[in-house]
Length: 264
Ligand SMILES: Nc1ncnc2c1ncn2[C@@H]1O[C@H](COP(=O)(O)OP(=O)(O)OP(=O)(O)O)[C@@H](O)[C@H]1O
Image (cartoon, rainbow, N blue to C red; front, side, top):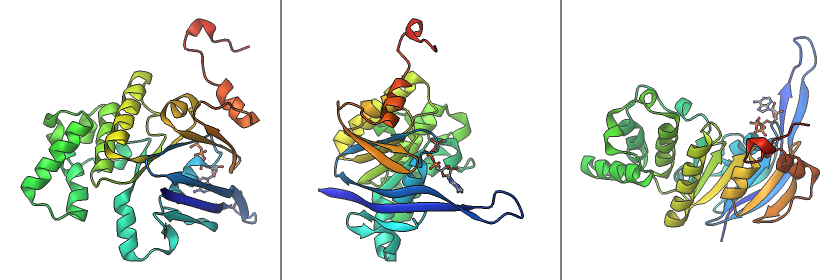
């Protein structure tokens, strides 16, 4: 079943290069269209500035596009009623690259994880405690972490808390925007494996946005390649890269052994 439909999205930003110069429209997305099935992990890759994060924000309902529609479970995000918006806020979650900045540093991990339940559910205190315990188990964090503040956790632990918070309301889709890019290689692999396990257990869908083709290939069922605000190629799992933009990303993957890395 189709979960998300992105139809002919155009987006531009208005810039004024210098104080007395005329405002210029910079086009960042042109006619972007794709759909996502339930349970699917769709990768979106492209070089820096190709428009991936802008597209991610539009999919999350955070930025209204100039033209086009985003339909999530059949609901147009930018025409939704307040009841529909509440449903979307439950079922559509995000994990961004800089996990620390998405926390209130004055809240403990317990308070951070409790917030979605306070906002969306009618659980009593004992039920909330039980749900937080389950969330921590889900992302393989120790229960002792609940009294810590975000600044007391490692980057990997912070990102697990972020994932736990995104999972709290059992969403249908999580948009992961460079969600593992700031972690070291070993941690990246661990978090990818965790995301894959959770995807199977909870029948989740992901949009995995990254400039890292290798990680995206490992994670995704299908990959869309972006260049200059357009989707230039769709690659099925195990498929080959034909478009020059895809080949460029592919060629940028470093060989695993340092001896094989030549910069000539
Ligand atoms: N708020 C904004 N105002 C003006 N221009 C913007 C704004 N946000 C993004 N842009 C421009 O839109 C283009 C696409 O940016 P975007 O962040 O979507 O690319 P990206 O592919 O996610 O890049 P990266 O991988 O470096 O994060 C860039 O040229 C960027 O400068």
